[in-house]
Length: 262
Ligand code: HEC
Image (cartoon, rainbow, N blue to C red; front, top):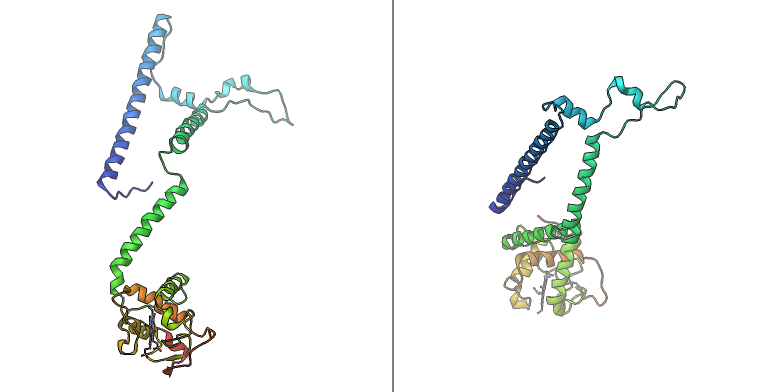
């Protein structure tokens, strides 16, 4: 059981549950007491004496064990090379437990499958994932603005980041850089030549601040920092893909391994 309460309401619900359980136990004892009294009255009427409650008698009732001296009664007729078998009944405690599981199963079925008042595992999982997703979004929204050209991360091998970056690229960049980054108005982004540097930090900076005098827009007003990070990683990921109709190289050649973060 997970006993970490996130809200006061949960704590109150739990306390109510505890009180209900205690209440049920008390009622059980009261009913048991009434039952015993009735039995005593009945015994007195018919002249029998009923012994006071004894733990031993109660325990014996629960285990249903037959005393050694009465074993003859339950001894079976078989005799396997001298090994003989007793016909013991299932112990009552075991049977009570079994009955309890039947009662439990009825309550369980009504709760989960008939009234559907508690979520099934899969539903519970989806709910928790939804909550976690919301927390992730809130966290990212809070932290998105803290990414800049110095803290941008190289995540080009993260398929999710690249997919998001590709989406942004397709929506906002293809007009000038080509559908596959092969270049057009803007330079080829898949070759090893860069006008403004080819590290993830350089690429982030170029996208963020743009090169307005040369026709490359500053995207910081349109894209959130984490979106710039995504699209920068997408650009890193398409390096060396040699798309058709590639624009001739512009700028300086940047060694392949310098794409890594500083
Ligand atoms: C209106 C056309 C246009 C659009 C739209 C555009 N770019 Fe550019 N981009 C350019 C031009 C032109 C350059 C070259 C600037 C220069 O000559 O210095 C450039 C340069 C770049 C560079 C630097 C390349 C290098 O060699 O250093 C990167 C990176 C880049 N763009 C990414 C993007 C991304 C990402 C988007 C979409 C969010 C985008 N661009 C949208 C026109 C555009």
